[in-house]
Length: 516
Ligand code: HEM
Image 1 (cartoon, rainbow, N blue to C red):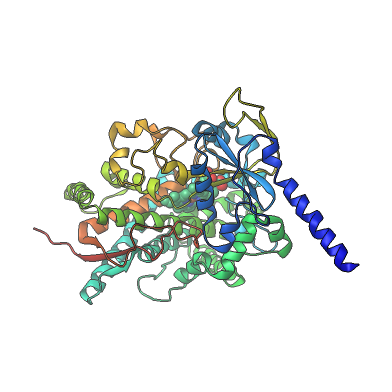
Image 2 (tube, protein in one colour):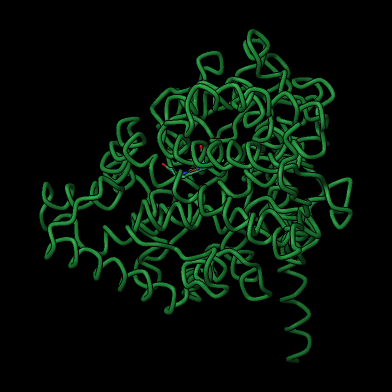
């Protein structure tokens, strides 16, 4: 009897599942064939492809529609394809697609839950309004000195290693050290000591957050693919050790600054000003979570850009020479480039923009429908009925798919900074270049910030880009760099990582610059 009931229950569950998979078919929206248990995202749980890769593959597999359906287990979601639709969703229709599709539970993971990226609705709006003024160009100019200090340490470290017979580095790790140094200094007012101590605590914490392990992959898989299970299991992304470490150092630094009247004009000082202004509304936990958000959002993304940029520069000798000439010319006028001089280097800017196109740290943007909305039919007006989008439907923008679509970027896998030089960048179709996202939820940007032809890096973006440029300038001025044969080419995305990595890492040879 029990066996019969069990078989009956399995059959009912099976057909219930299949009926769920008719959701997009009923609405005439094309979708890839889902698998019974995990819908279209199963590969992300087995580690075969990352979520970003899956979404970009869906983008490529359906070239003639403006959006494609998919199933996250059985929950329907959409991958957007059309640049105009993407711009509308991220900007004009933001009111219906307000939140990121990421869940952080305040009671188990306060630092993750209070990160602007995870915050929802009104809480997000308040936090974004508070933090955005901390990234003005005035603040950037004041913090520039910390970038340069970290770059000096990087140059010394490389020089010492070369003197000791070293000179080959996995550059993702190398730049993680530099970037951790920058963020430790700007966000916590401390020295990261990443170049001095092999087990520097800041670097150790960064690794604990971002290095993939079986457990972290399972946790992220559950959070993204089965978020309700993640809530039930009360999954936390920051261990107690990481949370306590950051809470303690921020408390100690706030105390020290107050007692000793220390003013450094860094991010922590901006947070202290905010605390004075808002009183009890802005607690030490708020300060800590913003400083940690600075750390988590800032160092891994930036070191990713630096590593890929230097790899491409090393792999393309013509680009190397052109960039070096630009850097040398600027350094003849000013021994150490200040903030404004760094951003005047047009070719460097183009190299960084092209790196962000071909190797964006985030392969996709994740939104969720927060207010019912209607899309025109996926094959265009007059080809069927409009499609009603319900609340909670995940909406994905596959940025990397667009960046590597030959329809928008000729020879998309060729690294060519000229795409971003002079008038060339005006021909880039809006909504196809999204390394920092777009709209009010972009990387600490302004509302309706969409126009590539007036492209300026803003706020958080500016912080990441400035530290990237400072590192590259210092390396170009002091070292010759070539690709080491340990780098596996063609590069292949490593699906284990949250932020874009390649299998085997990026290995480069450094030697002291030969001045002719
Ligand atoms: C080159 C380095 C960086 C890249 C490529 C990058 C990229 C991104 C992307 C793609 C998003 C999602 C945007 C969207 O969904 O529309 C994002 C969001 C965000 N980034 Fe960055 N980022 C970088 C550096 C930084 C830095 C240095 C900070 C902080 C100092 C930062 C803070 C944030 C925050 C707080 C958000 C969430 C914004 C919101 O939801 O309102 N990022 N970033």
